[in-house]
Length: 286
Image 1 (tube, rainbow, N blue to C red):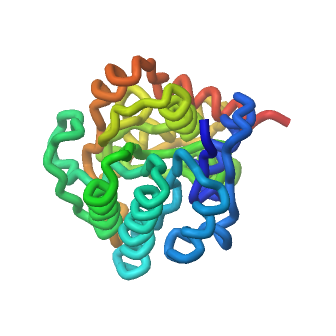
Image 2: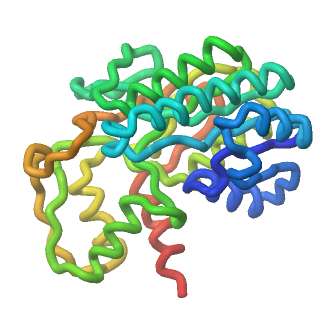
């Protein structure tokens, strides 16, 4: 197998891929710094592809500040659309496969039925629209691609909901958490393992897939589980979305159907609470 190169290596998912690769002794994987592998610098990208000659490129680089994107529309579009397009062009030129990470935010979230890959997309935020446009850019340029939509990512790395709750739990006795937005938490270590599995089996089943952990929960119940598992004494009060206004509108229901990914790759996906227990166990290690 040829080299694997990870773009956005310093982000949460990039660090999780590095962790899983190390555990599984995968040595042909490169994690370049952003200065070397800026997805908006086409000349720099070309040099990176020439240098490492990857068989696979994994795009973890994204503009993910959902609320900030409502005002910073140009940069969000550059990173999420132009950046994805640039990688697709380089992959096509160098005969590499692109694994591109997308989001549940491509859906409107107004239907209480798990979304399948072929459901109509209708983003309700700038972030969601730019990620959808990025998907379309990849599809238009490069047949040899995997687009993986995920959501509610957390891990031991970077900033995320689990780490924020654990930190707030040490400072506060009471927290108000939204209870009417429903989805599925995804342990980024599990997602990283799946991405590397695709590569390890040299799959040619290109296309779009949904991957999150199994099960359904709200942000309120997610927070309750975090404090229950971590044995923190915090009172969690459920609130409605309209009681916590944000610049960007979030999908009310963003549960994704994983039938396609499970059947295509013959995998079992962990239940969200089981993965949460594993993550908090690592975070609480001395």
